[in-house]
Image 1 (spheres, rainbow, N blue to C red):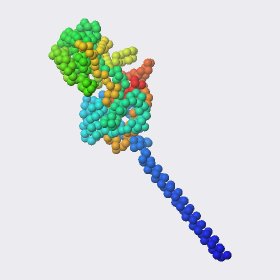
Image 2 (cartoon, helix red, strand yellow; image 1 turned 60 degrees about the horizontal axis):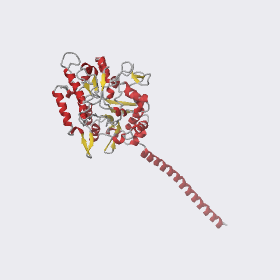
Image 3 (spheres, rainbow, N blue to C red; image 1 turned 90 degrees about the vertical axis):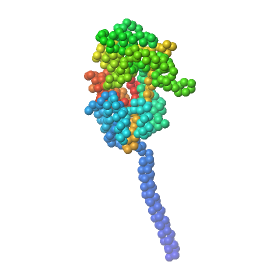
Image 4 (cartoon, rainbow, N blue to C red; image 1 turned 90 degrees about the horizontal axis):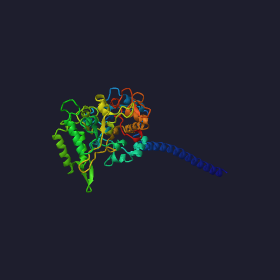
Length: 452
């Protein structure tokens, strides 16, 4: 009996030990499993967290260099508006419009690199890339933080990102202007001068151009009795290259190779023609200094002030005339209207001259001109800035009101929609004045067709 009881006690003791050990292993396993899961989650979180994701609630301070057309005001309303909307602080790098890229280059050379700035051309963009001061981005990052902007790019110009790569790397947002499809070199005549010298038909051939230009120089078209007028100056010189078979400053394919138009044999005839005009005093002797005397680049003071009678300065939207009551027109028309209202209302828009062989042609701008917004290497210190900058651009292109706020100023303060649904400046505001508040310069990126 005692032996049987002893055996039973041994069995029970063994079972107890087994159960104790089993329970201990189970609990310890659970505890270890919990610890392992937490650590794994932390690792996964650190791996999957996008470094470009802005920190919630953080007020980012962004170093933002702008392309100036006008000096920025001390209290720029549009800048303040977007600071409040996006919970950021803009440290705006505002330079003298005439030397802005030289000044920016000096700052960068000294080690100061903005977070975002505008490049004006492909060569300008490429030079910054060569200096190693740009921050590379991926299309997926743009898509994540700027979905509206990304969709707009893909819908309207699907190859924009492709064209804005340097050696396969993307450093920013390509600027594009869909309306540049209509942007050829303008040909603008003083219609009152044509009438004054007895020309009733808009010149078409190179001979008719030559006749008008000589008359503008020799026959006192402004009627002041002084020998102070010329046929043309800097910009219209480019019109005559196409007349002799080679438009100026373009690359084209010739015999299966890339060729530059300005060094082709046909250009000799162009230069001979222009040399004759210059020798005869038809070209303004100060043409080398250009037609613009300061301020907004698209304005030709030489033409507006009655020094020349033919110009190709600027682009088409610098020459919009008043088309209906309440529509002010643009730039050159507006400035000319102040000085000589009659002449402004009699501008004549023509075509480039036809040459001896019937050739004609001028340069047309590309919708993707090589300009855009690039990101600085400074973002490496705080990658969340990139996400925030992209969110700002995305907000701008979310709808027409946001876009027009960024481009034209505050609705109801600087502009309003008219009865035709077009925006109009109000209370003497214009593009120049609102540019000084940050509109059209600080947040310029693209000009999509849907908002034109």
